[in-house]
Length: 297
Image (tube, rainbow, N blue to C red):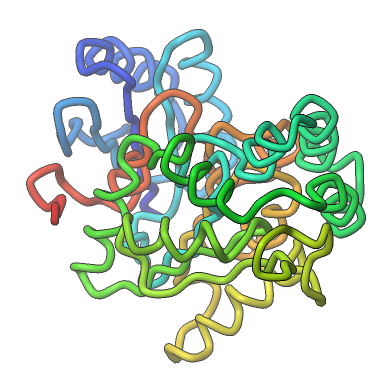
């Protein structure tokens, strides 16, 4: 079978040497790799004829150890996905909104510690979310808008990823264990078609310290991916799912291409690919998009 081995470097100048060491590492695995196909200034494909996908990935990752280069190994056929399901906090945006809200409430350190443990899979997400939201009781609603304006920024490549996939006919959905106040705004800024998240309960002036039930967590994210795929007449194999925390793991494992972005170890170990160095446009290169196909607003 044909495997696409896609390399994406954090810096264009690192790509040639990375291609060289990977080509050398893949020698002797069934058929040799094709000549590199340059997808962009910092990305290229190698097409390999092999029935040993896991071995190809292992050799490529070993060859790239210590280099600021990400790699994805997958079937060359069918890699351009028709559904994108993305986590928000620390994936599409560069912060954890609940931690930043906690900063406005004066309890960031204790909330961030719980967030970190939950994202590592050490705590059940639902209980951890209730505990953290409880610490926000009495926070003025004006702090939410201030938090969004002052702290929330799209990660590099987020808008290009979403708008390119949407422009090429894919449905793009933001699915977060965070809050609708933020997902609605982030979805609009990045170009998502829809968003799903949890609801903060408030009285019109301050937060009540509770969250709407049922909580959208790990299983709800998986259910969202499955429902979105079914509504389009697709299967999860037609989807790209990206995230960083343990509550993203089920959808990442179910998707045809599940990518761990700057992820916790429990997620990185199970994903089809990791993006530790490049920006979010790596997910476009993984699908075989060329830089000239990227779509801006």
